[in-house]
Image 1 (tube, helix red, strand yellow):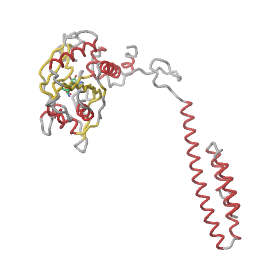
Image 2 (tube, protein in one colour):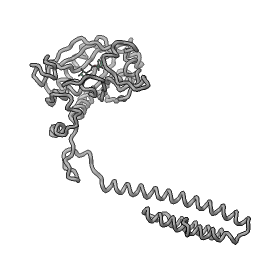
Image 3 (spheres, helix red, strand yellow):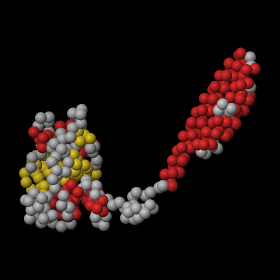
Image 4 (cartoon, helix red, strand yellow):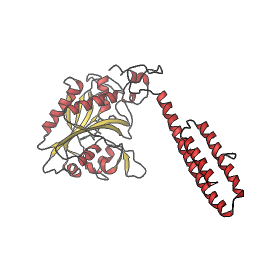
Length: 347
Ligand code: FA5
């Protein structure tokens, strides 16, 4: 009997790997483990065995049954994966195509104008030797506020209305300045990097204010860096972006993580400075915040403020994109309106 059991096991093992479909597998399983299957046929012969032999055979037969069940399950899984892969291969679509008609005859998508401008900005910064860093959207209170010299109960926390998580320790980052701290934690000075990304504020919306918008943070740390370096750098940057000299003005601005701090406005390119809803009729658009990095912030990032200094800036990408493509309302960006986004394919 044991000899026969061994033979059935061998037959099973040589047959299973050639099964290629789930219905065939069900039939194969029934042939060996079903009521009228080969294993049961052997078991029914147990009646004629002596008690000791019955026991030994029963336990061996059960062992073989378990091995068969495991092998059936594994082969079944393999067949499923093969079938899924075959399906994926058959329905393959190259979603990186942006300017062609797809196999299904659908018009392919274009890049969102904010993505386009962000990539352009990254190229400009890479050409200037900056590294590109990333930072988390869900941030802890330390990296968004505390390490940036904004302690708890500091009024500056209210300048940016925050979406907090229930644990009261995590939040949706209110600015990309968290990347300053995360970058310093990774790097040894001197260094220069930028970090673009989405930020979130619980704000009243209008033509130039969104609740989810985009910023690009920049930081340059080294020796003997001055405000003049920063201003020259930012002017050069803006003329690179707009491919022409543009009118800018620098105002004192308060941000606890820089000292001195400034806000840079550029002339509104939607109305040519005459006044419109985007610039709130003043002819200037708030473009970015900047300043010399506060010594407390350098310390929090592990940089010795007695040896190094530098500047940082946080630029609004949505508004830059509006100027670049003459978009008259920031709310178009998240409208999901294809007629809006399709206009930018050609650019
Ligand atoms: C900040 O967020 C600072 N973290 C910037 C900074 C970085 C200052 C480093 C100093 C050093 P502010 O809240 O002003 O600053 O935002 C920066 C820019 O983001 C603004 O100039 C504006 O262009 C853009 N911005 C701000 N709020 C919105 C909004 N609700 N919708 C669209 N763009 C916005």
